[in-house]
Amino acid sequence: MARAKISLIGAGNIGGVLAQLAAQRELGDVVLFDVVEGLPQGKALDLSHASALAQTDVRILGTTDYADTANSDLYIVTAGLARKPGMSRDDLLATNLKIIRDVSQNIKRYSPGAIVIVVSNPLDVMVWALKEITGFPRERVLGMAGVLDSSRFRYFIAEKLGVSVRDVVAVVLGGHGDSMVPLPRYCSVSGIPLQRLMDQPTIDAIVKRVQGAGGEIVGLLKTGSAFFSPAQSAIEMAESILRDQKRVLPCAVYLDGEYGVSGIYMGVPVQLGAGGVERVFELELNASEQALLKKSSEHVQGAISSVTL
Image 1 (spheres, helix red, strand yellow):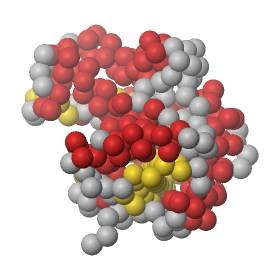
Image 2: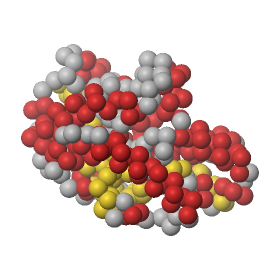
Image 3: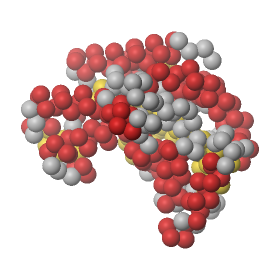
Image 4: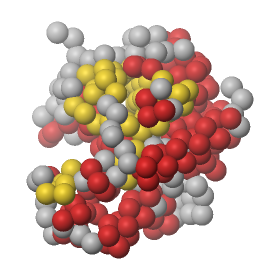
């Protein structure tokens, strides 16, 4: 059986880590694309030199020509500017929207049957724009957000309690920004509800840190934004799709009435398999959680309303 073909659009920090992880897990042959001549070729060659040590047989190609991505099974899009200190994800909208237009048109041209995972910020608008431009069904266009936000939530809980992150279950809904909605009521440690392990002020402090976690990293790095954890998050999604694992992960998907929301992308739990988004799960929310999710959806809708494709 021929290996899957994975095209990574953007060879920056996230793209480079994505290529490494995809190769190490042998998810398929990798095409690393960027508009900067030499950048994708250099990273691809460097990774190829490590293939004997990593014991991987996949091919890694670096290119500045979209034609090399033709007939890809899966794209992961990271192209665009990263945040700088003091910037929100929404501040990137105008510049990154121009980039996503070009990316979308080329994906549609060269791989009309592909599944696409978008990582570029502002995530909820970028993934919506790509779906609108390509015309792909919602099952084949999704955004990486909730996996990362939930992973951060799990880490902060495990760190505070001094337990393994493997035993922490947590979920974050909503837009990928300050309006995201961590759900402590759905968090547990090996089945033990979070509320039995922490007092409310501690939980509230963790929730606030989750919402600002990306900005915290931007402030520390000063010249870039997070890249290890976003890449790991996107690879978890890619592996579930390419290996038909049927994992249930929180991802940004196009909503069509779920949670009372339609016409926008927002983070919710979904099942990922060979068909892409195969099922959307609706959690039962209390009045407070519903109000927070409504506020988050309105923020996303407001950002989309300002966009002209």
